[in-house]
Image (cartoon, one colour):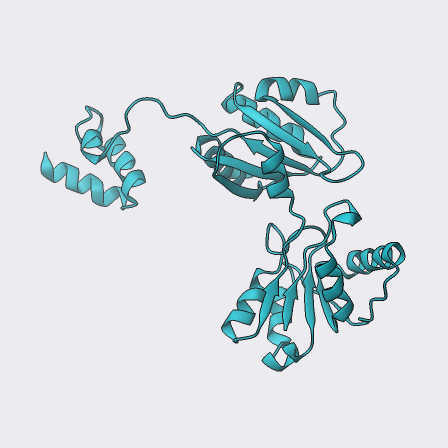
Length: 271
């Protein structure tokens, strides 16, 4: 059997009794980083006066998961196998999903235990009353991919949640401010840990504040959705616009997913 076990995101007391029991029964533990997992088990062993019998640990992360999966057979899972990421819930901006899919494809019994998760914790702490959110994980470090994802975030009509490292938090706040300086942002630092802190203000004020703030630690960013005002345009509205055919074709292509050249030719034929 395969069991995915969430680990504390900071405070060791957040480990559940059920998770401890599964870890004590594990015969093989797949880890995002074996050193981190062994250190965690040592701390839990001392704190809870427990004995973890597993002596077989294997790394399983985004850089080697495909190679590891090729070495597995359904018979491998006749053992009690556990997967843990370094912190929090496996598969949520962490490895593990491919292992779950392997279990599904091969009719292997598996389970996922509930537990610590920075996304849901920040969502509950934010004070936003929205009932929906989209989790975007980490932005790309730079370039077109980063710009496109941040644009999607800022144009979203649904609450958006990001993870961000301390090295790029100020840059991200500046980019958000440049798009919409009045947008309300909630920031959570080092959730569940000793130096946990939260902030909620408009993007402009937070950017100015964080020029002087200690930005060490991991961060969660919750971004207020945009408000769309006025009526939305449909395809007929776009077609009736008095603009150049090439520009009109590009707009229609974005709305329909069709090829720009194909739409342009259709527009020219209609004329």
